[in-house]
Length: 220
Image (cartoon, rainbow, N blue to C red):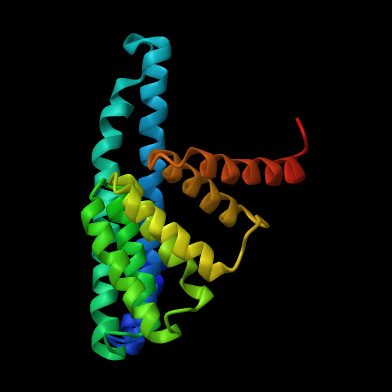
């Protein structure tokens, strides 16, 4: 509600197609996406409780109402992201760095709704823009390749996922884990190596994740 009021003020002061208006729309899109994820998590919890307790012990009205609410939030997120992208392209050009941020947001919504093909299309567009802006070998591309690897993994395209994760690791210039983001990258690489039949290499990555977790959280 606060962001929507801010959007109305910016539209009044700056005009409908100002880049700052697009920034606010992007932020609103992020909020709706997050709300959709929260609803989705609630649905998962309901499913778990249904299994554990039985249908009779659940508030079924809540479980029925949550699904359309989730869909509406994702639809709203896409609408704001797409409006923001249209403005940015019109005012800033096709290859402005901020376009990549919006495209990634769109991809994340598609991922949440299970539309992995569209997610991949938008991730590739975001990566192409970042390459133009930063160059082919920039460490700033690490997260783009990781996101693309996640998309390939979710589609069962394990060879392409491995290639993307490997590219992310090469660009990040990290052979060891020093933060949660890198740990997640190593876990996903270990998974996809196992799925590609490279079990020994997979174990190496899992061991690095285990050592990182021990150093951060302790042996127990």
